Image 1 (spheres, rainbow over the protein chains, first blue to last red):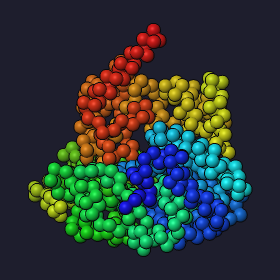
Image 2: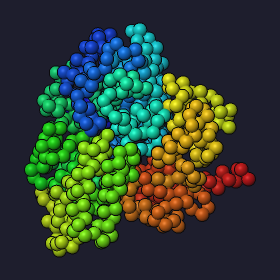
Image 3: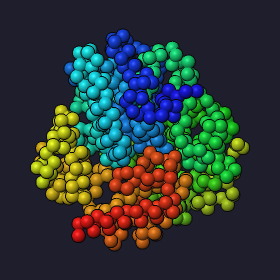
Amino acid sequence: MAHILLRNRDIADIWQFETYVAHGGYEGLRKAIKEHTPAEVIQIVMDSNLRGRGGAGFPTGRKWSFIPKDAPIKYVVVNADESEPGTFKDRELLEKNPHQVIEGAMIAAYAIQATAVYVYCRGEFWDLAHALEERIEEARRANLLGEDILGSGWSCNMYVHLGAGAYICGEESALLNSLQGLLGQPRVRPPFPAQMGGGLYYQPTVVNNVETLANVPWIVLNGAAAYKEIGTPESPGPKIFCVSGHVERPGNYELPLGLTFRELIYEHAGGIPNGKRLKGILPSGASGPVLRATDEVLDAPLTYESVAALGSTLGSASFILMDEDTDMVWAAAKMIHFFKHESCGKCTPCREGTYWLERIYERLLDGRGTPRDLELLESVPRQIQGLTLCALGDFACNPVLSTLQHFREEYERYVGLTDAVPQAAIAGA
Amino acid sequence: MLAEKYADRIAKIFAKYPDKRSGVMALLYLAQEEYGWVTPEALEEVAALCDIDPTQVQSIAGFYTMYSEKPKGRYWLQVCTDLPCALRGADEFYRQLCEYLGLSEEGGTTADGLFTVEPVMCLAACDKAPMLQCNFHYHENLDMEKMKALIEQWRAEASRSDGDRG
């Protein structure tokens, strides 16, 4: 099947403006402006049931519809702060198919009648961000952004803003603060970004993920009904699955939502190297709960609903795979180290909680852990979850609680409660 | 002084935003490029340009991992050792890299001031591990053999440019 998002896999050099245009590029934006009112564009995206691809899965059209029509200044912010461990899809889109993201962002901007678009790129996308500025210039020269776009009377510029290395800036309100030159820490909500007082420079703002926006030109060109034929009714459309860790062919896979874990891991990504069996699956990077690779899990469809029903989240669909030899206590410690480092320090439960969780894991891995530490690992998250301004605190609890739930015997070995060799893996390939 | 030397670039930065304060991150990069690290004087300069307090600039410089508040080696190597990379051998790669450069496992800067090595959080290149960024440019699918070749290349590059200066 031809790609809708990773069209760079089908068309060489689609990053070049001329190539992109020669393959129907910017026709979605033209159609939106020439044939539809902004309200109609919002309705089309609402009807498509496109859900945000950054992790939260919020319906994109609804997000756009929250923007007050009469506000004089409105912004679109493209969240290109891709920082979730295991996620590397936005980078491929921005590097290899950048004009599609620019086009999607401009359609979003038209739909809410934005006055400017900012692309917030994580600082490490240094080379990519500088190349993106050139792509934006190409679109400007073709009057696809800037002043009086395509003679419509609507003007909207696009700018790239570089972050400087902070996971928290992928959280939308922290991202907005960072863009304003404030410390990249989350804001109290409400007001939400779409509302007056909640967005960039406190003006109504839509913040969309890169991959989300890359879906939009196709939806406008082909219609909501055609889009809903891809994937499942609740989770329509293509999704880029990032697969990393213990896997034969790591990389991005654009596939319709609704295929099974087994199909993704074994058919597309080539299965687990060295004939090993799969033990743990993180379907949404470090921030979602780990799953034990049982047959029940492997045969479940990859939709927002079904992964939630298994007790995890599809999130940004960042699959980190761990084979039977992986020490799950070590893996949890790695993730806790990450969240402790990336906690912005604003909310006490997260700042202190991640610090103490890391100390406990250090003890466990050093062989100084006691059975009491396992109790602590269960009680500390209770003092973080739901008590922080953003989701980072909750995310930090997930690796702890989910590894305890599914791989408790490995913790018990660390504290001398059992000598039993852990029941290795589960499903045969 | 940044203000005189880079007047055009600074004007371009400010032109992007309705509020000068938004220029602080780009200006910190500019200062780092000019001075090699974010010096106390740089904080003052950036603060004056953005019309904010130096303390606020310092808090921002300290918040992010890509600003350095102390001198670094000429080649600043940040190796991703997060879980997805670690599952593909990044911890061992990092350890061997430090050993090869004569550094402890905490990383640090080599005696000749050429290399700074440190572990870093996820760089969105998990499918191409082990990997690192050197002065903000990515090097992926690495092993120690490729790494040694890169190090020799950088050493040669550095001695060439030192020769030019001499």
